[in-house]
Length: 153
Image 1: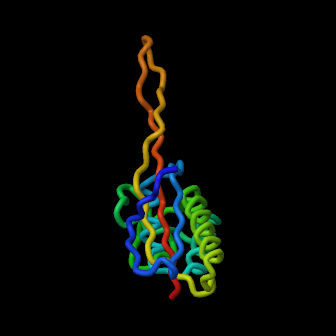
Image 2: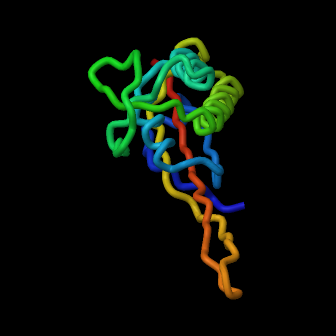
Image 3: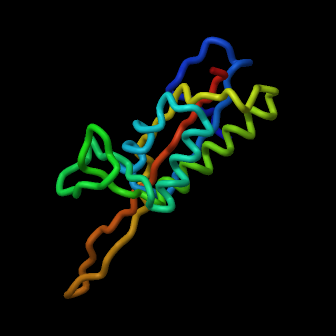
Protein backbone atom coordinates (compact mmCIF):
# COMPACT_ATOMS: atom_id res chain seq x y z
CA UNK A 1 0.00 0.00 0.00
CA UNK A 2 1.17 3.52 -0.74
CA UNK A 3 2.53 5.72 1.99
CA UNK A 4 0.09 8.51 2.82
CA UNK A 5 1.28 12.11 2.96
CA UNK A 6 -0.85 14.21 5.30
CA UNK A 7 -1.26 17.94 4.75
CA UNK A 8 -0.41 18.43 8.44
CA UNK A 9 3.14 18.34 9.76
CA UNK A 10 2.97 17.57 13.48
CA UNK A 11 5.61 18.16 16.10
CA UNK A 12 5.25 15.07 18.28
CA UNK A 13 3.83 11.90 16.72
CA UNK A 14 3.10 10.39 20.16
CA UNK A 15 0.55 13.11 21.00
CA UNK A 16 -1.52 12.98 17.83
CA UNK A 17 -3.76 10.45 16.11
CA UNK A 18 -4.61 10.44 12.43
CA UNK A 19 -7.20 8.94 10.13
CA UNK A 20 -8.08 9.33 6.47
CA UNK A 21 -10.80 8.35 4.05
CA UNK A 22 -9.94 7.96 0.38
CA UNK A 23 -12.14 8.08 -2.71
CA UNK A 24 -15.29 8.67 -0.69
CA UNK A 25 -18.26 9.14 -3.00
CA UNK A 26 -19.37 12.45 -1.55
CA UNK A 27 -19.46 15.99 -2.89
CA UNK A 28 -16.09 17.75 -2.52
CA UNK A 29 -17.87 21.07 -2.02
CA UNK A 30 -20.00 19.74 0.83
CA UNK A 31 -16.91 18.17 2.42
CA UNK A 32 -15.02 21.48 2.29
CA UNK A 33 -17.84 23.32 4.05
CA UNK A 34 -18.19 20.65 6.78
CA UNK A 35 -14.43 20.47 7.37
CA UNK A 36 -14.17 24.25 7.70
CA UNK A 37 -16.90 24.18 10.31
CA UNK A 38 -15.33 21.31 12.32
CA UNK A 39 -11.75 22.63 12.45
CA UNK A 40 -10.73 23.43 16.02
CA UNK A 41 -13.73 21.73 17.68
CA UNK A 42 -13.46 19.20 20.46
CA UNK A 43 -14.10 15.67 19.20
CA UNK A 44 -17.32 15.03 21.14
CA UNK A 45 -18.70 18.41 20.12
CA UNK A 46 -17.88 17.69 16.46
CA UNK A 47 -19.53 14.25 16.59
CA UNK A 48 -22.69 15.74 18.12
CA UNK A 49 -22.69 18.46 15.45
CA UNK A 50 -22.48 15.88 12.63
CA UNK A 51 -25.23 13.76 14.19
CA UNK A 52 -27.49 16.83 14.28
CA UNK A 53 -26.68 17.55 10.62
CA UNK A 54 -27.57 13.94 9.72
CA UNK A 55 -30.90 14.34 11.55
CA UNK A 56 -31.39 17.66 9.68
CA UNK A 57 -31.70 19.61 12.93
CA UNK A 58 -28.65 21.83 12.47
CA UNK A 59 -27.50 23.30 9.12
CA UNK A 60 -23.95 23.69 7.88
CA UNK A 61 -23.22 27.28 6.79
CA UNK A 62 -22.11 27.40 3.16
CA UNK A 63 -19.64 30.29 3.01
CA UNK A 64 -17.74 29.53 -0.18
CA UNK A 65 -20.03 27.41 -2.32
CA UNK A 66 -23.22 29.37 -1.70
CA UNK A 67 -24.60 30.30 -5.12
CA UNK A 68 -28.37 29.79 -5.10
CA UNK A 69 -28.27 28.27 -1.61
CA UNK A 70 -31.28 29.16 0.50
CA UNK A 71 -31.27 30.57 4.00
CA UNK A 72 -31.60 28.20 6.95
CA UNK A 73 -32.91 28.76 10.43
CA UNK A 74 -30.42 28.48 13.28
CA UNK A 75 -27.33 29.96 11.65
CA UNK A 76 -25.55 32.74 13.52
CA UNK A 77 -23.52 35.24 11.52
CA UNK A 78 -24.32 33.57 8.21
CA UNK A 79 -27.56 33.02 6.32
CA UNK A 80 -27.10 30.42 3.60
CA UNK A 81 -26.68 26.79 4.54
CA UNK A 82 -27.60 23.20 3.80
CA UNK A 83 -27.90 19.77 5.38
CA UNK A 84 -25.25 17.64 3.61
CA UNK A 85 -26.34 14.34 5.16
CA UNK A 86 -24.30 11.94 3.01
CA UNK A 87 -21.05 13.87 3.45
CA UNK A 88 -21.68 14.21 7.20
CA UNK A 89 -22.11 10.43 7.54
CA UNK A 90 -18.79 9.71 5.83
CA UNK A 91 -16.90 12.38 7.79
CA UNK A 92 -18.39 11.06 11.05
CA UNK A 93 -17.01 7.60 10.21
CA UNK A 94 -13.53 9.06 9.63
CA UNK A 95 -13.72 10.94 12.94
CA UNK A 96 -14.72 7.76 14.78
CA UNK A 97 -11.82 5.95 13.13
CA UNK A 98 -9.42 8.69 14.30
CA UNK A 99 -10.85 8.37 17.83
CA UNK A 100 -10.22 4.61 17.76
CA UNK A 101 -6.65 5.25 16.59
CA UNK A 102 -6.14 7.72 19.47
CA UNK A 103 -7.47 5.17 21.97
CA UNK A 104 -5.10 2.55 20.56
CA UNK A 105 -2.17 4.96 20.98
CA UNK A 106 -3.15 5.56 24.61
CA UNK A 107 -4.32 9.17 24.28
CA UNK A 108 -7.02 10.59 26.54
CA UNK A 109 -10.14 10.36 24.36
CA UNK A 110 -12.09 12.81 26.55
CA UNK A 111 -9.75 15.72 25.75
CA UNK A 112 -9.24 15.22 22.02
CA UNK A 113 -9.42 18.23 19.73
CA UNK A 114 -9.47 18.39 15.93
CA UNK A 115 -6.11 19.94 15.09
CA UNK A 116 -6.38 19.46 11.34
CA UNK A 117 -9.18 18.36 9.04
CA UNK A 118 -9.13 18.80 5.29
CA UNK A 119 -10.80 17.54 2.16
CA UNK A 120 -9.37 17.27 -1.32
CA UNK A 121 -10.83 16.23 -4.64
CA UNK A 122 -10.17 12.62 -5.52
CA UNK A 123 -10.05 10.81 -8.83
CA UNK A 124 -13.48 10.92 -10.49
CA UNK A 125 -15.34 7.73 -11.27
CA UNK A 126 -15.78 7.74 -15.03
CA UNK A 127 -19.23 7.13 -16.43
CA UNK A 128 -21.20 7.64 -19.62
CA UNK A 129 -24.75 8.64 -20.51
CA UNK A 130 -26.08 7.30 -23.82
CA UNK A 131 -27.33 9.96 -26.20
CA UNK A 132 -29.15 10.00 -29.49
CA UNK A 133 -27.62 8.69 -32.72
CA UNK A 134 -25.21 6.32 -30.96
CA UNK A 135 -23.26 9.02 -29.14
CA UNK A 136 -22.39 9.24 -25.46
CA UNK A 137 -21.72 12.06 -23.01
CA UNK A 138 -19.32 11.69 -20.08
CA UNK A 139 -21.04 11.67 -16.71
CA UNK A 140 -18.43 11.48 -13.96
CA UNK A 141 -19.03 11.06 -10.22
CA UNK A 142 -16.71 13.05 -7.95
CA UNK A 143 -14.77 11.48 -5.09
CA UNK A 144 -13.21 13.13 -2.05
CA UNK A 145 -10.22 12.44 0.21
CA UNK A 146 -10.61 13.38 3.91
CA UNK A 147 -7.74 13.75 6.39
CA UNK A 148 -8.20 14.15 10.15
CA UNK A 149 -5.56 14.79 12.83
CA UNK A 150 -6.56 14.74 16.49
CA UNK A 151 -4.49 15.96 19.43
CA UNK A 152 -4.92 16.29 23.15
CA UNK A 153 -6.27 19.71 24.14
